[in-house]
Structures are given as structure tokens and as C-alpha cells.
Image (tube, rainbow, N blue to C red; front, side, top):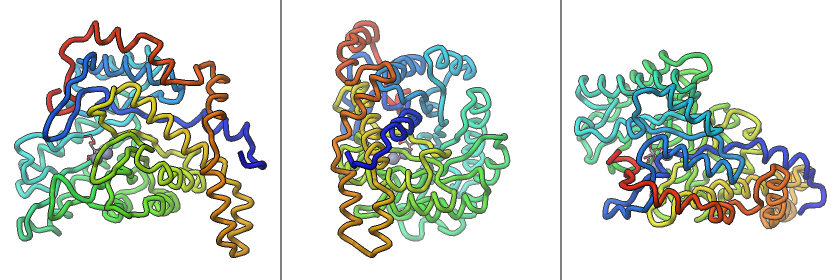
Length: 389
Ligand code: AOS
Ligand code: ZN
Ligand code: ZN
């Protein structure tokens, strides 16, 4: 560990970081080729929360759960929020879904037909009603809208339609509520995507106002994109609403965060720390699917991976870094950063967990708990993450 590290301050920062887990990560999921059903997966939103409570119990830093509507449809959302509270959890971001109906073949809020646009907008407004009931702060917007062929639709008119819908949703937001606009460079559209990059998301959010922020899904960039630069810039502009964390090797792989490139995750977390994002309003959410690995331990591992990257980012000797940067000492500056990255923070985190009264090894504690066997015995016919729910 770097000699000048203020360990109590690092621990305090780690203790206060909250990682939000997604309801859909607890259910079955797969690729377009096959869904490998796993035993014991949740059959209802309540059961997803039961599993999320285990993740929070063993990590101590995963107190909220993101919902996806209508995948997590219930009759009474206030009741679901009360159920979550009973488990020591709260309901987090409400993820809207305007991509799975036949009506959305040519898009949702950007669709050429005003009827489909109205239907999509009504869904987004209904999601804000749900936020009122759950007490959620954030509405997360991801649009599958785009075109597959040049000339298919008027790309600029689609931006006008998007702006109109976003403005209507923005208008509906209550005090303390925000909308987070997510971008993704392609898929399912392959020629143009209506919100393909941070610049497009930023331009819309800037016009809308301070309740509109950009969300960075780490899997939504072209290979080689410098994501930490985007993070630094958005933080500087006070427009970073949060993250959808996951790993990618190729496209939107949705693998465990920190698995493919832990160094990139560290560089992102360093910019978060540097930009004051750890103490601000940045939401640290996971957006992952566990197609072949057991889901709950994978989610625990993911939370731990975020913690490890954050711990390393907090250990960067900022004073030494600034001194080296000011002196133009390229190698020394790089060495300061690498010193922090190469520190084994697992003992520090184990110590922190003991101080928090939890097992220093969350995955082992989960395996010992018997929960996996219990849900395998009790739950039959668990649901698919999205499409079947
Ligand atoms: C889609 O690629 C996005 O990452 C969204 O956040 C989406 O709503 C989420 O992945 C659940 O499918
Ligand atoms: Zn996402
Ligand atoms: Zn995605």
C-alpha cells in the first residue's frame, strides 16, 4: 500500500459507496442462441429482491435494486417498496422498456408513426408514476431506436421526435427525480442508432436541464474508446448520472464488471474519485447477465470487483501525482498511478468487512449460507430475465 495512504478515509469512502444490482441479473438469461435455465432462479419480483438481500447481506454495500418495467410488473409498487424495506433494501432506478413489443419494429419515441410514439411516451410516463410509488430517484432510459438501412428514415427528424418525447418526460419529473439517458453505439439497429454516443446524450440532457444526466454503460462503446475520458468530461460538466457496469470483450457482452479489463475499471474509478463522483450523485449500477455462471455469487463478485477498483483509485497518491505532473515527469506520474493499481487491496477490504460485521470472504460466506440449496428446493419454474417475464 502506498505509504501516504489515509487508510481510515479510504475505508470510510468504501463503506459509503453503494452498488445497485439489477433485478434482471437474478433471472435466467441467454444469448439469441440459447437460454440455459438455472435451478432456483426467482419467479417473482419479490424473489428477485430476496436474492438481492443476500448480495447486500454478504457485501454490505448493495442496498438497492433496479427494476425493469414491465419485466418486474406488480399490482402495487408501494407494496413492493415496503417488501424491499423489510429486507433492508430499497428500490433503485426504474428502467423503462420500449423495445419488446411488435409495435417497436421501427423504433419507439423516434418511430415515424405518431401512434407508436404516443404509446412509448405513455410507457415512460407510467414509469415516472412507478417512481412516485417506489420512491425511486432515477428513470433510466435506453432506446433501441435506430435504422438498419441508409434512407430508411429521416435521421434528423428522428432526433426531433426524440427531443419531443424527452421533453415531455422531463416535464413530468417531480422534485428530486432525475432522468438518466443511456447511449449505445449499435444493436439492435445496425446502420444508425438514435442515441449512439455520449455526445448525443449530452446534447439532449443539456437542453433538458439539470435533472437530465447521462448514464455510461461500460459495454456500449467501440473497441479502444477511452471511457475514462468520457467520465472525466461528464463529471466536469456535472452531467454524469451514473454507470451501468459490466465487461465486454466484443460487443454488449454484459459480463461481470472488472472481469475483462480490471485496469480499465480502475482508470474509470480514478476519474470518478478525481472528479468528486464518489461523494456526489453518481449511481453505481450493474447491468449484467449471468448466462452460464451461478447468478448470486457472480453478482457478489461483481460488487467486489467494483469495490476493488474503487479502493485502488482511492489509494492513488494524489499529491505525488500532481507533483510529477507539474514537473512534467511522465514516468513518475505514470508510476504513481501504477503503484496504486498494483496494490493488493484484498486485505484492506477483508479488514473493512470485518469492521462492518460481515464475513471477510463474501462468496465463501454465501456458499456456506445454504441459500443456493434452499432456492433450488423451493423454487420451481423460475423466469427468464426479460422476454418471458
Ligand atoms: C441495453 O443494451 C442497455 O444496456 C439497457 O440498460 C437495458 O435496459 C438493459 O441491458 C436490460 O436489458
Ligand atoms: Zn445498460
Ligand atoms: Zn447494454
